[in-house]
Image (tube, rainbow, N blue to C red; front, side):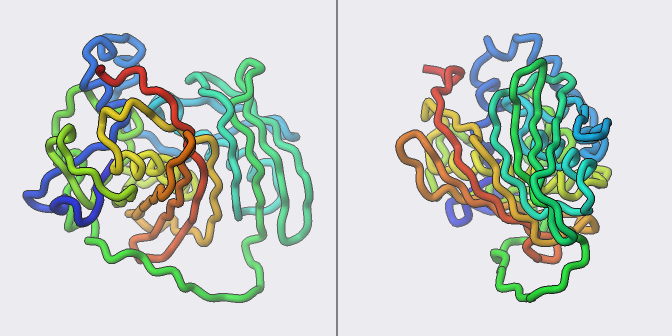
Amino acid sequence: MGGVPGRAGRAGGGAEGEWSCCAWLRLKWCPEIRSRTVVDAFYSARVRDLAVDAAVTGGNGRYEAELVPDWSAWGPVGGYVAAILARAALAHGSLPRVASLSCHFLSVGRFAPVDVEVTTLRRSKRAESVRCSMRQDGTAVADALIWLASDHLDGLRHDAAAMPDVPAPEELRSFAELIPDPDPPMPPMWNSIEGKPLVWHDDVGSRPLGEPYYGAWYRFPGHTTDDMARQLVILDTIAWSAVWHAHPPDSGFIAPNLDLNVQFHRPAPESEWLFGEGTAEVAENGLIGFRNRIWSDERELLASASGQLICRPDRTTPR
């Protein structure tokens, strides 16, 4: 959810605003969908901690977790699912940090317990490769290949990454300020994330089309103690937001993630705000490639991500 720089006013004082074409907008447009009890049940005002909701229990390569409905949008948020797999990898492995993750989303899980099986593929003193498979009542939900790494590795150093010149979070208004009483309520995940978009359009239906780019600052209220998990949630979420800005709200398609591939460059648990930006430069033959990045409030690059979205008919769009 956010805007395209240069296409409208900033979301600071007096700017226009914009939402992405997520479940919230489809519900807003379709009263018949809003009446579904399953939708009403998912919307609550609780603020959650990813460190708790992505926790796993178990051992010896077999772990359990529960998909919590507070982290839902179209279904369980893909970054949240990936965070559970990463936590299982850390619980199973002998090294303390995730270096990279490649996750395939295989089906939409229910908000219920899941089983995670973890297998070590290769282990050394410096790095360890593990495979994590999430199942729910025998159905494959997601699989991930994850590299773990030692915390103190000698090696080359350089940093040529330059964060875009964007306003600081205190210069922008939050989604809660821009839409204080959303009707219907936003998807549950946004109860636990404060977002400040760069650009905002009040009239979503007549917004100008722009570049497939999205950028916003994010903060997790209560400051979740799982830095990796919050990065995964943002990196996953902003992919579709970038796509949406290049197409009209009634395009007739949604595009869930096929996969999410992340390289973690450095941790920043002390960074209260994270800046997420995404681009989706090519949409062709039903697939949309994306490149996303996360920056700290000190403007250091924390993680890079890529993946593919697959287009599907949006059967909730009014015709």
